Image 1 (cartoon, rainbow, N blue to C red):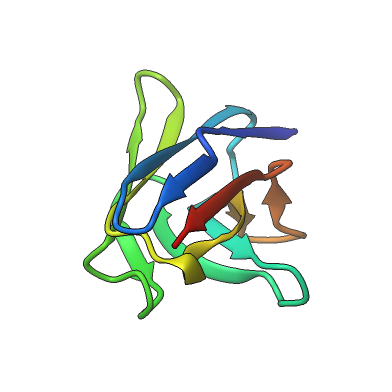
Image 2: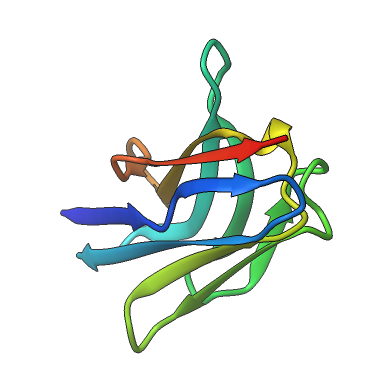
Length: 117
């Protein structure tokens, strides 16, 4: 069983920075990637950034390239999303994701990021 717990969300002004954390635990056998997704009200949940289980970045959405960085600290069993030059359109609930080779994705409970003009 995989557990994911996000933290670090909050209210920030446009142009500011924020770092989200995702503490992970449990059995990661079969997990092939880790990542961050976000969902704004009325929208679908979209991929923001993904990396391999070993920590190599795989993919960023076009809208965050050059502004967001995904990383992890294996010693702390924690994944991060460093966000800079935040824009109002970055406002969303951010979810930590662990994707297995088989079966459904694993999700955290989410952390809210609100960017004010």
